[in-house]
Length: 132
Image 1 (cartoon, rainbow, N blue to C red):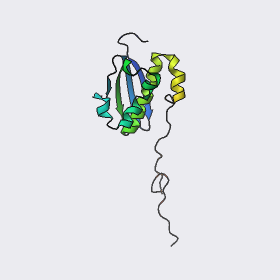
Image 2 (image 1 turned 90 degrees about the vertical axis):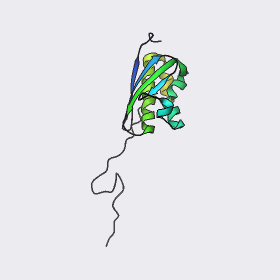
Image 3 (image 1 turned 180 degrees about the horizontal axis):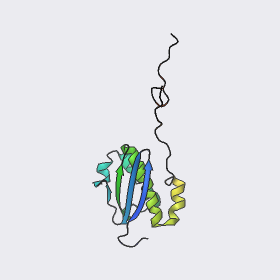
Image 4 (image 1 turned 45 degrees about the vertical axis):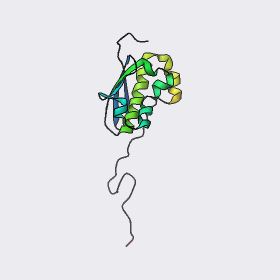
């Protein structure tokens, strides 16, 4: 366990979202962009997605969470917070790595939006073709 008042940092990315996450020993207060987690992520699925690593290792109420998130949409931001929390937890206890790795919380999701190509309507969609 870290010293009292120690800040543990982790960076998470998902699509175009970036989350900077700080964990500190506390009573489980969670703030995202200076707002409570439940207020920032209004969808329950995003709320549970963001705190999955804490639940997986069973330390939900032992740390205060402060996250600064930007870019992308809310679901991408929740995924970025999840990766940031998982990486910060490794600073708490390196023995958590196997359980976090098995649950897939340490893997950065590489899927990003494919760029639009010239001469086409979108990334893959073509303009309508007619022989005559």
